[in-house]
Length: 234
Ligand SMILES: [Zn+2]
Ligand SMILES: [Zn+2]
Image (cartoon, rainbow, N blue to C red; front, side):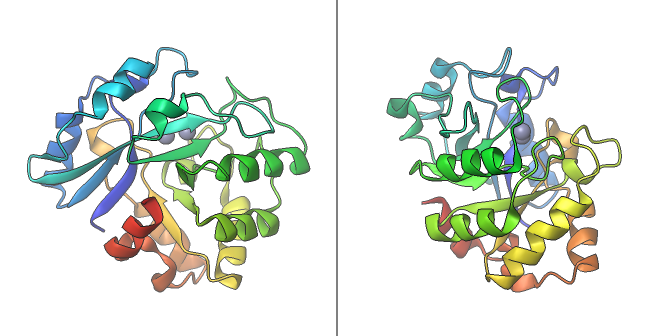
């Protein structure tokens, strides 16, 4: 595995003190060739401000021999799929992950949650839906996967969601359902660490065990195919 496109730094305000350079160094030491820095959007308490995201537009795309992409993990704010960064800056970042977090979006019915994700996917910069396995936000995976395919958006299998101590509940059943429909529709997925510090960068231990258990085909895992991954992020 050479890529990890969902990682966080000190700018996410979760008590981690690591910088972008710390993440690049960690990625280098683990043999990764590319990472994406995707700090939380401005609606998350103490997270990245619009001016932080604007500053990324001038940041170097190569550090410590590792290629860097600069994105954001947006908060989906409502069922219409509105997100928390203005288009002027968002349109110039490399890509965006859109996720639901309890501080910024109260869980709705299965239909409402699915609609919220589907509407967020329509934003041209949203390329990945983050951790849509959270048990607090039930979704219709068949419908979600079809929309992802239609909008050329990726769904992620999130390492931190599969941790037994994870705060998204027991996500295994949701992830199994997501993988089932992805396989049925030949829709690729991306494995993400969602690491909030250097230790977890590029660690997909649980994801790899899970895809194996589910017999999910390797050719649908974009972490093995850089060019195809980049074409999704464009
Ligand atoms: Zn998140
Ligand atoms: Zn995250």
